[in-house]
Length: 237
Image (cartoon, rainbow, N blue to C red; front, side, top):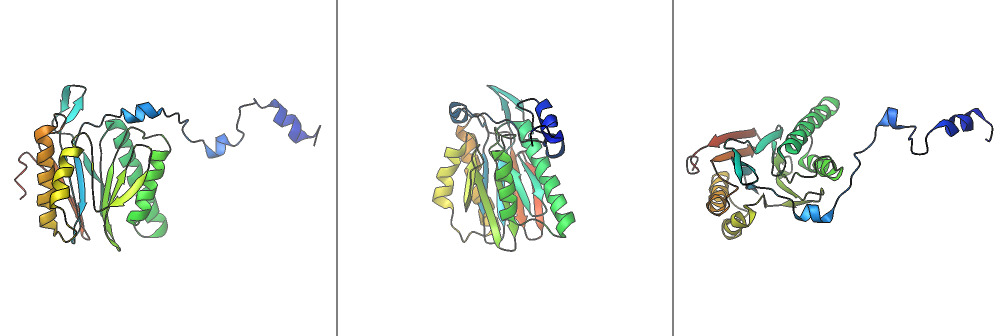
């Protein structure tokens, strides 16, 4: 090959040039410091749990910037699938980008295959996106309903995912978990699940200064996802 046209063209390339990048692009340059991950701040409380009839997800409405309340109406749970939703904690910009990406990917999937993604496929996609490094400071909870039933998926900041019957994220997690550990059982109806989730959120906002200012409630069944906001935590009970 020496002296050929190919070798002459190759020699003109810079040593670190990837000749395939114009066509295929490249993944984000990811550099992760373990200490940064351990110090990740996620000032909020989000809860998701499965019931016999579907999925219930609740979040508070407070967005914080250091010690300041930057918003009292932040929406922290959004639909990313006709029968699925994602709660967010961490960076608002990264979370919004993740939600838009999931919506687009699900729409493309539906267009190409004539049906919606399963929750397992959507959870894998979410994990891969987090693992890419582009959404590193987002710690979501994914919930939804498909032909196999109700699902809740828990993530860490590096994209690790596990399926749970209930999950929490954010700085108020430890306070909410105490309620869920005591009151959750797998035979909960949707109404009972709503009550347990709201009790968990109320426990968190009582003790976590980064959580509060009302609640977003998402209820997901085979018929779709319904998301509402409330100032009074007891209003939907």
